[in-house]
Image (cartoon, rainbow over all chains, first blue to last red; front, side, top):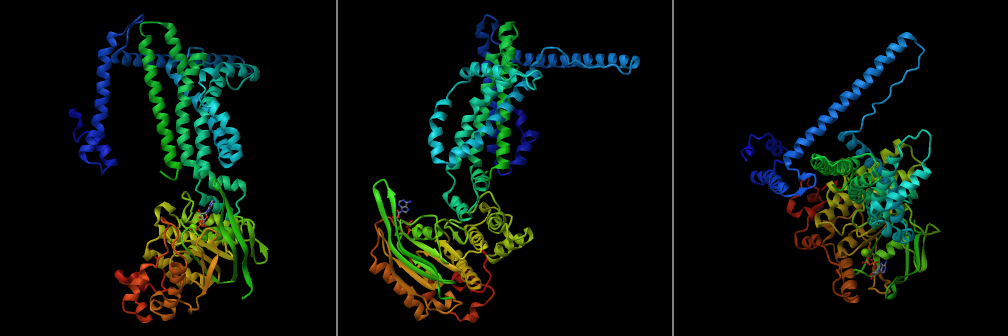
Amino acid sequence: MSTLTSTNPLLQLIRRRYPDVTGKALLQSVTLPVLGIALFLIAWQLVAPQINTSLGDFPTPANVYEQAGQLWQEHQNEQDRADRYVEMQEKRNARILADNPDAETRIRPYPGAPTFIDQIFTSLKTVLAGFFLATIIAVPLGIMIGLNRYFAAAANPIIQIFKPVSPLAWLPLVTMVVSATYVSDDPMFEKSFITSMVTVTLCSLWPTLINTATGVAQVNPDLVNVSKVLRLPFWTHARKVVLPAAVPMIFTGLRVSLGIAWMVLIAAEMLAQNPGLGKFVWDEFQNGSSDSLSRIMVAVLAIGFIGYVLDRIMLMIQRKVAWDE
Amino acid sequence: MSKSHLELTGVSMSFDTPQGPFQALDTINLKIRKGEFVSLIGHSGCGKSTVLNIVAGLLQATKGGCVLDGHEVNTPGPERAVVFQNHALMPWLTVYENVELAVRQVFRKTMTKRERTDWILHNLELVNMAHARDKRPGEISGGMAQRVGIARALSMRPSVLLMDEPFGALDALTRAHLQDALMEIQQDLNSTVIMITHDVDEAVLLSDRIVMMTNGPAATVGEELTIDLPRPRNRVTLADDPEYVHYRQAVLRFLYEKQRFPGKGDKAPQASTPTEEADSTAPESPVEVKAPEPQPTSAKTKKPVATAVQN
Ligand SMILES: Nc1ncnc2c1ncn2[C@@H]1O[C@H](COP(=O)(O)OP(=O)(O)O)[C@@H](O)[C@H]1O
Ligand SMILES: [Mg+2]
């Protein structure tokens, strides 16, 4: 651990950020996580060769690292190819236009298979869309439930029953319903995107809904009385008193929801063969090459890391928006 | 100004509880003149807040009713502004925005935006809080927050100001400052005030009349005491004024002799320390009181009514 001297730029940065943290605590706050990761990697390295599968030994950290580089390289290559493909078409179009200025030209997109990186972005887009949809349903509904005792009593059994449903159960139903109802000659979104998104929405909406309702029901009665004395109209009351009062609780719910959304999405993509990281994992599994397990492990780590980053982003937004932080 | 402005007639209140109905108030009759400052005093749990909430319209009396300027009170409204014990400011709004919420709602049709801004600042200045206009309740002291609560209530230009133990949660020094500020404002605006307190000195110092409530259940008005002390009142000079001492004793006698203590666990009303100290210290002349720098040791008893309040 010779890197942990005071000349370490990371350490200096931390020290500048948290000036009141003592040297010892600071050292611990850096060394302990590093130590944890190191021990994990060592254990992994030791255990991996002991696990023999039909696709060879379980990948070691080094294998995984290598495959991560490989996947990145494949992505770069594909992009180069795509660029060249488009360039070629542009040149051809230019030639056609030179011959005949009125000619109609078009550029077809590169038909290559999506890379690991492409799948990451597909998954991110889907999860954010599903989470957004869940939020715009759950927050207003939660406010209504929290404001009205009768409504709450009526909604409670439905919430309790649907909350624990796994995405795997929803998926066939959603797929069939989307196929039947989402018909258009020139669809703005692909069906698979809609299916994944709706499944994510159905599974992730509950924590936000429940937390919003609880937050709203628990608004300080004095504040509600202020609102009554002022005779605030219902919408002003909801917007100016209830919603801000419930914001801390709502954000706690949103963070749980986003975590669930991300987990559910991977499962849904895997099961439904919808584009995304889940499909990447499934394809590699079906592929069954000697590198497959390493590549799946790269995906596992990427899924975990992205989930972590998403939660951090939510936390940052929460700190900006919520008044109690 | 002697016509009855606010009138409670035969107000009874019974709450539905899991153990059956609980009779909290029984036949409360009360007439209050415009500009009068009335204190409600009584042991904890006797029903003071219930009376205030009925006047505010936040509770409905089971029998009898409350009439303000000839209109029966059924719902809450800004003409009966309430100052809550724990300021009840929206924690996510700044001091200015908290008052603005009230002013915009009450005067959105009768004032221009400019006038509303001036009116908000005017009310913050009344309680000496304009300097903290952009702070949030979490960033100011309890005494300051309570002042903003008072400014918000005043900004509604209420016919009656209802205060439920407005200074109960504050330390003695801050409380004295705010009492003085309130006396001054009430004199300037000639507003009608009903204040709940369980502080005997506070009641005598501030009130035109003290309404003493009997212990619950089925609490009612036990005695009424008109406080005929000239205004402006100065807490220091009053401390050993024989009339003041007499009023104080009358209230104490009611609370501690005529009304026995309610069950254990309840807070008993108490005479606050400032006047106790003032009793034992040498009386100060008004001239001395005007000294610009109050000594920290006796600042709480020395604070002159006319001095700007800050904490
Ligand atoms: N909503 C309610 N339901 C049942 N009992 C209540 C309710 N509100 C007040 N009470 C009872 O009424 C009595 C008077 O309460 P309150 O007016 O708050 O007393 P005070 O303000 O004088 O301390 C108390 O015994 C209290 O327990
Ligand atoms: Mg009370």
